[in-house]
Length: 110
Image 1 (cartoon, rainbow, N blue to C red):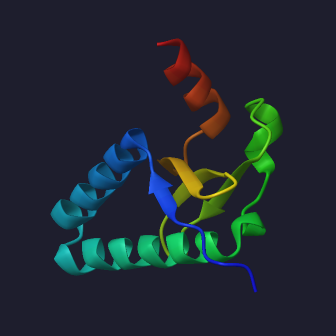
Image 2 (image 1 turned 180 degrees about the horizontal axis):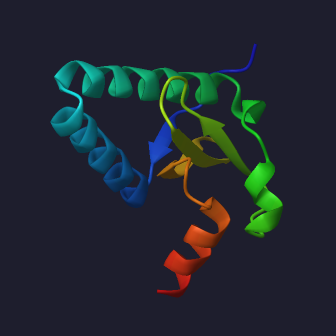
Image 3 (image 1 turned 135 degrees about the horizontal axis):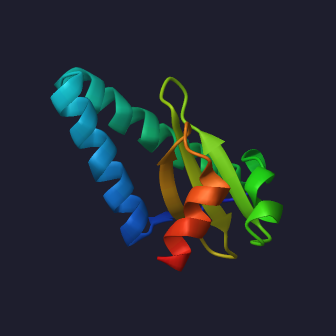
């Protein structure tokens, strides 16, 4: 069995996570925000153990070979990440209702 790779969260992904957690804490309560954090931690653990588990769905659209996505169980958020030789880089954590390719392309051009 391969070793678990560390998961490195980008600054932008951390901002995404902080915004989502604050939203849950203020709109749904602390218990939901904590469940979001626990679900996120479980997803990071799974990605570290099985990096190829995510879908390559956005890799072609965004012209980013190796990009994978994983939807959080019970929450409408999509983790966008790339496997590196020695780690998993979490690039963004975005709400799944967005048109993610269009939204990211707009954000890149801004």
